[in-house]
Length: 191
Image (cartoon, rainbow, N blue to C red; front, side, top):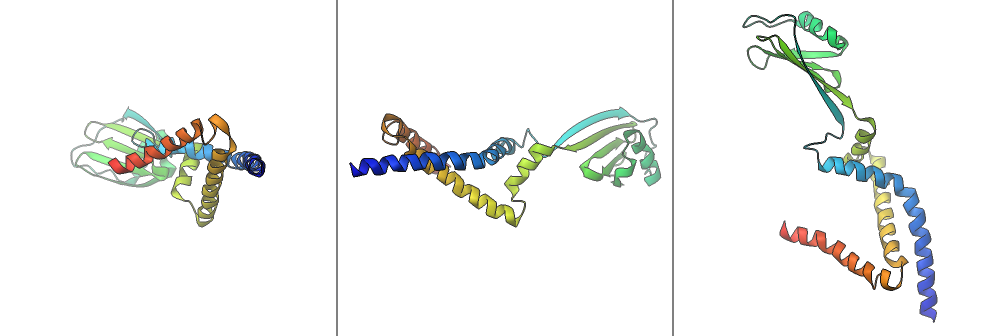
């Protein structure tokens, strides 16, 4: 009988801790989950920036060997509203010019054909901020991430002992727990 009271008390305590810690860390769990999906698919999703490409024709082309100076480049940037964001330009190949702009945007110019491709980078405010958390943005974040990890352990351990019977650790919950442990173990063994 004493064990029954202890088990009941442990389950009650587990439910309370599980609930409170889950509520406390819910926002961070969502932030890590959403940005984690984006980070896992970086080949198709840039979690930090949106890139908008605009192709357009220039009013003129340049003769072979021409190298426009900064003033001429600034005139090219005026229609884009980027003249205040110029950082530098160079000529990677004959007849081509690349103009670098602040915030990572750029302009590729095919000088012989008189065409250009403008790539405007725009920061994704929410997803970019979430993704930054994966890069450990500061010492204070290291400590908070450690507290978060302990919180996840508490959520997991209290969740494991919270239910009794066929839905608990000695029933379906135990089987799910073993499968959840087996998946990464098998992956590590096969990798």
